[in-house]
Amino acid sequence: MTGIIIATIVVGATGCIIGFFLTFAAGKFEVKVDEKEAAVLDALPGNNCGGCGFAGCSALAHAIATGKAPVGQCPVGGAPVAKIISGIMGVDAGEEVRKVAYVRCSGDCKKAGKRYEYTGTKDCRAVSMIPGGTPKKCVYGCMGYGSCVKVCDFDAIHIVDGIAVVDKEKCKACGKCVKECPQHLIELVPYDSAYIVSCRNEDKGKTVMESCSVGCIACKICEKNCPSDAVHVNDNIAYIDQDKCTGCGICASKCPRKIIKLQPGTVRKAD
Image (cartoon, rainbow, N blue to C red; front, side):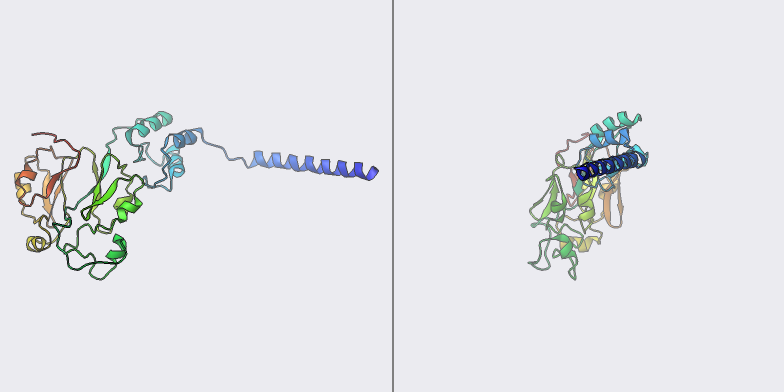
């Protein structure tokens, strides 16, 4: 009987000592939770897509809370989330311009010529490793094997007639497709951009005409006719400065190749 009592006392004392040290350690090594960081994390969409440039929403929340990232860093949340976070952080969110991905290629199955028939792995990166690259005559064009489709978490990209097409209403501008495309054809443009040059071929005009029926031939007609100095031809390819573009459509109407297109779902800014 005495042995049982002694054992009970020893066990109880040991438990009290361990409990004391655990309580002490919990207080000593407690990780303080930043209330602002927790609030910012709660405001973020939680996609963990990495489009913000950080490992995930938790990393972004920490960066915003510590002043290492702006309140509008999340491309998925956009202006609405930036407004909420700016209230948490007590700063001005500023004007956030919504952006969407755009594939600068119009060389679909009917317009772009082929050099050979490819029957291997249906992946753009895999094809780009093959000697000679893409089976299309235009080595700059969209391969159409959907690497960008596979990395999109929002079902915003689909292959249509051999080229990738972005649904601007679904796109969150996370940038994954931009990084994934081995042809560097995808870029983020303002949501309300009007006209965009849907080509990236930097070859000279004659070569372009032999490979694609709609490729830019760097004729500079668009550049010469733009009233707002928004279009310029560099490295044999026309490019539109969206900050200067008024959406008048003159460049598109003058382009002999009809490669300057109105972004799908966009209403012309001016007539």
